[in-house]
Image 1 (cartoon, rainbow, N blue to C red):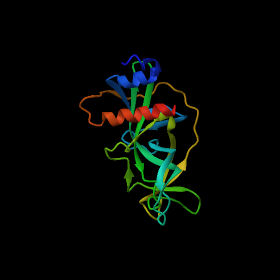
Image 2 (cartoon, rainbow, N blue to C red):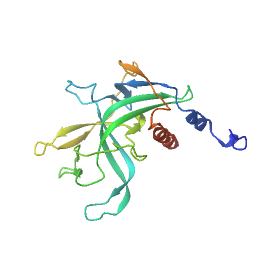
Image 3 (cartoon, rainbow, N blue to C red):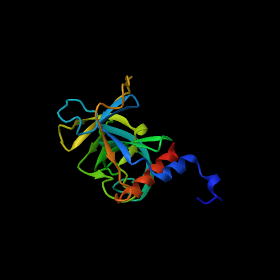
Image 4 (spheres, rainbow, N blue to C red):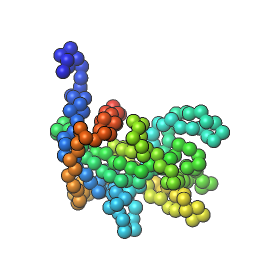
Length: 205
């Protein structure tokens, strides 16, 4: 490290630059924010929905079909959990990430508010599914709120988002199932993009 700038670099940034420990923990369920979240695969065969997620974010979007100019707005994001990963930065701090399938809420043809003022989403078109730097399917666990989706009986491609209130949970451990996943920093072609995402998240804390 350059001694001229060593005193200007925070400890958090030093640990981020080292990358997390190679053994990441992967979960199928996780308790946070008063909710117990489960991945889509974990809740297969169950009658309850614990894999649906909601958050708001300041996003560049198209104002309307008539106005194609991009504008900044606080947009709702609705998704479904695919994966839960806990990264350990050598004990200095821990980051839990939720990987999600995100419906496109940036355009009117895939997101609408019905006459009863409910938000409706269409999962026929997903966003953040590619490998570009702006394709970020991950969010920090602390950002997540739970919703559940009710199918629109008049149009099965649409779902009505129902928001839930947090409940008091007795935390008896993060999960009852987990596996250890070894992450290769050199062979994963998306690792640099992933690290940039972590650094952006750290700036928001």
